[in-house]
Length: 444
Image 1 (tube, one colour):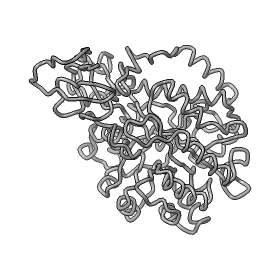
Image 2 (cartoon, helix red, strand yellow):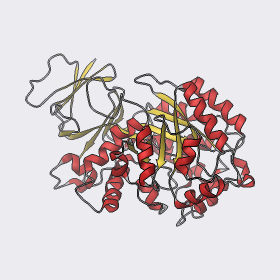
Image 3 (cartoon, rainbow, N blue to C red):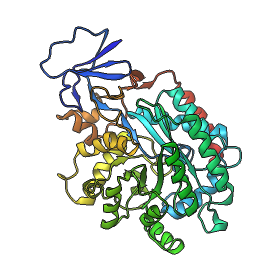
């Protein structure tokens, strides 16, 4: 079936002023301004009220944290004390609460126009050994693309790390399960719905050997690598104290200076380190909201891009955001960038949207999503400007960012509508809210 998404109010693509033709889950062709109406279509969707974006791509999240938003123990703390307050609470995770947390996070993302999400899951208390399987099942049920990162922590408080003993695993268990989930779920082909990356959590929760072994395993399975890095000055001090080097040096020593890798945050890199990351094609996920909440600092997005670093966006965990909304992340990235560079002209709404789409796709190693172009996957987010917040807006695409769009009216993933009239297809939002609320009580 050929579907014409007809005459959008605006679209983030050149030569598609009259819309796009979708066929077999991909964008078959663009319809430029002045072109006659295509005659060889089976169905038409009138998009005259809609602003069309490529599906947004979230490159860093912690789905389980939806259960601990605005948690009193962690409010108004910076990263290390924030983590120390929350680790014992997160240790209560079980399969049922985890499943509903994942479902809610994915639904929030989808409603905000996100069609591909990367989750960094690194907590495996006893009983939750199949956490990655649950994430894959929930993403497939909702119909969104996912990069699940098999996270890990093997350095607990007794070893000089931050997490308590109850949430870490030993290295052999981590590597064995990493092989298991890669064998079961990783699909590196174009149009893939599920990909797996390996993601030792951070320099203060894993050993140097686990970093190196994960890099070797990623090479063997041709998958990507992910970790937190350069988030706070405390992290720099920890690495210097424990490893005798800065975080980027640790990457190099363990085989992580590679285009397979993308890093969450990347706030505290110096000029030389930015150059090294760019030389090797290491990506950085900018988490503007989380960095503001935890007072971590400002990511040097423009400097990273100038050095050749792919820059994407992430909402980060819903305990440091406290939301799972990619359009909100776009707006915050714009504002944070302007604060960082003290310029309204150097960081534009188009930059922020590029980071959330094409840049994020590059971080995940994908060239089949993130843009509206022939041959790409038909992943699209359609927004209306009917709310009061948009009244008087004259540039529809800029209005989405500057006026604070937060909920898509329609979302298509792989040529199938997954959100219609602002509601997820086939999902009872009221029941989800009730189920999630009940699960969250045990994390109070």
